[in-house]
Length: 174
Length: 174
DNA sequence: TATTGTTATACTCTATAACTATA
DNA sequence: TATAGTTATAGAGTATAACAATA
Image (cartoon, rainbow over all chains, first blue to last red; front, side, top):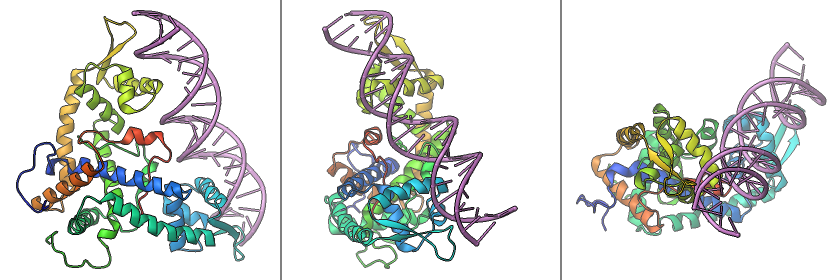
């Protein structure tokens, strides 16, 4: 099947009028499937965001992390406790300012980030296994156009911000 | 720009290798934007699921609704209380079996469902405004292929089921 | 006095289990 | 005894405010 074919589709799935719903639906599937793969590594989705942020900007203070995540400092305490208990990061008192906790990835934390790249590839393959390479490319390009037009950046997932306002998760239109 | 062009993309957005992340990202955006529009009508995303289910299969008992939503009967009580307080549905004792509550949409509830169709169209237009009609069609077709290949049905959004297992919402891979 | 991180408190959401009224 | 719906209870998650250590 050629995705560029402009011939009308069978009425079971009206295409253009339900893109919003399908995006919401397939996006939720993608999130859920990825969460399952993370669980195999003993990780939760929120853990990944924290590890990525620290890896990209280390060492990082808890205040800075709170700002990046869009949550209050008190919540960061529990969030970090959890990941630290898994041995993926450590808090070290800053020598320059002893109020400050520097967050560092452990070697186990770095190993996990390497593992995540391979489960990401497997996730990708599972998700779009029904599409040909050209179709995958096309889908990626169209999604990037939509993402860019709404100011979504390639690296930031708006999960934490969305959790601030209720209701945070939604169905799409029917 | 032609989405079928197989030429390599600029490296800022590797297309095929990050479709999973972008699906999760754009899907979350679609859900959040739709939730905003619902809020203008005084509705929350969960309300919509309930109204749709009752509209499709009325009258409905609370037990049946609980089964469809994948939640326990006690939770349905609060869920329905909220929508009933908004005047969109009513509970009526069944004459045949007086233990049973039949759930019916009110005329206000039916009016809301009509309104939802128009906000759905506006939502759609906002979401994919950056795409040409042909590109929207292509995106819809590709998403439908992905959805069908994973057994997603055109009318059911897996939100409630996902809430059962923790963590329910997730980031995508980076 | 201001700032970093922590703890205390209250509030919401949800699941499980007891309860009632019907059958 | 079994079933539909309700209420009671307990646990998790999170936001706000009070607090201790450091600057």
